[in-house]
Length: 240
Image (cartoon, rainbow, N blue to C red; front, top):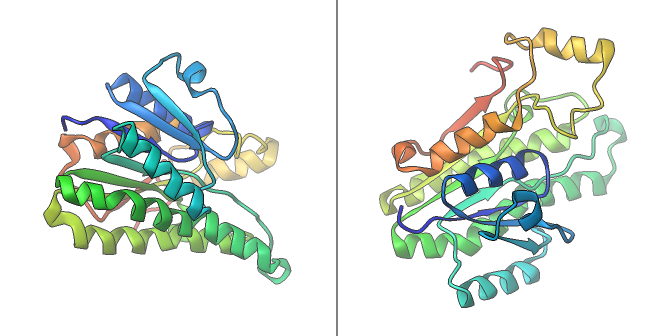
């Protein structure tokens, strides 16, 4: 692709930040978002990036965002929907707002962002959309009914949209990470950690670079015949 601009939601840490680093090193101009201010230039040690403070559930903020990108000639042709939250609780104790907030942040936000950018991809007959899902959306996870449902929804979203836009040279795929070494998994220690590792055939956690490498491949010309897929990166934890 001649135009190499990637837009990554939730780019201030963990998987999102690692994806940003990988795309920058591959020659992309990187636009990253988080809800609060973040010095993306410092984190990436580069001027070839832009941070936008953005709530991906706020459609007014999103509309303002695209206007600024159009004015600056920085409309991306790669969109990576990575932002997400957890509000874990057993279903019988789960509050209505715990369900609503997770669905909005993890699933409706993907609709919001994709709706914003896909019209430009269709016009240019080029683009890639990569949704960061989770193995929880494939196999379920006790205490995460809301999270698992939101991530499973991404799979259906991905497959349906892929069928609509494939003829326009646009790919749409999901990456479903398993247990990855990030802030979200750093609290696992001792017996709890060993219990998790015993479920993983590879007997180890992955790292954010594993996810970033796959995202970069799917966004490249090498991955342009892969679409509508949910690809697990989980050390064999879930095998369909």
